[in-house]
Image (tube, rainbow, N blue to C red):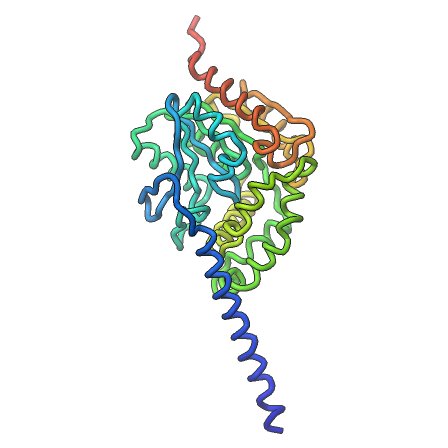
Length: 323
């Protein structure tokens, strides 16, 4: 009888011990993911440490990665080095991703991140700059054009999700951002699940192109860190909130705008989103890359580089003369 009474208690103790051990393992693995030599610079701004890498000279160009990724994404694609031949390129780890921290108690919406990036550019003495954003980073690029247009020389938007409808998968992806239970899940089981599902996730975002092995290998442990997963889930919640509470409108965007999407994107109808945005933003340029999935900058980097050069050229021409 005593054994029967103590059985549930013992089971609870064993479960707690197993989860604690798993959390410890994930913590060690997360530290090891960033244990190598750090490249780039770190700026303390707005309550966080913002990491970025830079190279080149010329018109400043800010690169903003998508949800779950990091600045290194642009290095592995070759875009960073290619564009550094003609531009002063700065690729940021957005709040909570890569080597950047993410302060708690703040949502860090696309608008807040746009203000942060603009403030960081000002801190570096940059008054006018181009922006290249991929996926969630494209949303921030639009917010930069909306909120800080006098400083924006042009924007290039790749695989963006500009008109998100309410979706069940967004709601589910937001749950681990909740306090207490969500926190425990992020530190124990979620990193394990992310690493287990990593090959499938890579195939989905790269399909129909081959997975970029360098990116997949480097990103796996960084993307499965509990701290980065908090940022991922928070940004899913921000997208869900935008879908539920606001109606996206971009007709007032007045900076040179280039839009790219893969014709075979499996995450959402990226081509449909791109065409809709192109119709709304006067004078924008659109390129749908055939045979490309969500990672257009990885599988068709020259198309992205060419669009950056085109948008930069449109800025250099200036507005048409008054007649």
